[in-house]
Length: 184
Image (cartoon, rainbow, N blue to C red; front, top):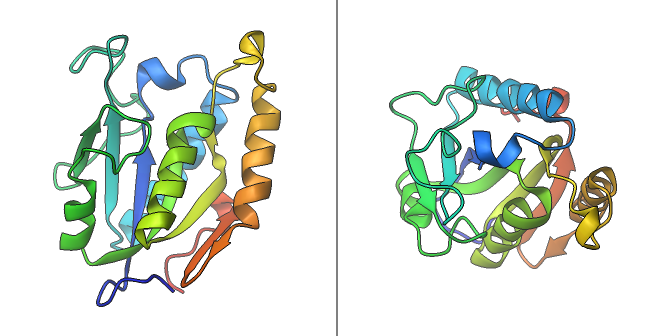
C-alpha cells in the first residue's frame, strides 16, 4: 500500500552482510543462511536484490572486512549501494535505484539489527515505502557490555515492534524467511 504512484514492485534490501559487520554477530551462520534463502527466492521470482555495504573509519572500502560474506554472492546485474550512515537512504543513490526499478515495497534483511537495519526500516517508512522485516534474517553483535540488551533480546524486540508498526498509507510487518513469498 505504498504511498508512491506507479511503483508496484518489491525489492529485497540486503543490508551490510559484510565480513567485518557480521563476523561476531549473534547466530551468524543461521542468519546468513536465511538471507541466502530470501535472496534465492527473490531471484527465482525475478524480484530485484539490492546490496548495501557500509564503510567507515573501521570498515575501509575494499578491505576484506568490507566485502560481502563469502556465503552470499551478489550477481553482476544486482545493484550495489555504498553508505556511510546507518540509514541506507541517507546520502546514497538508493532512492534513485529503487525508483528506476519501480519499487515501492522493501523486504529487509541484514545487519546490524539495532543500527543500520532499524534506521533503514524507519527511513523507508518515512519516505513512503512499505517495509517488511524478515524476522530470522537479521542480526547484531553483543553490545551488552555498553548497556544494550543481549542480542537475542534486541532482535526479539525489533521483531515485536516492527511487526506492529504502521503509518498512514504504508505497511510494515515481519515474516520468517521460510514464509517469504514474492508471488502474492
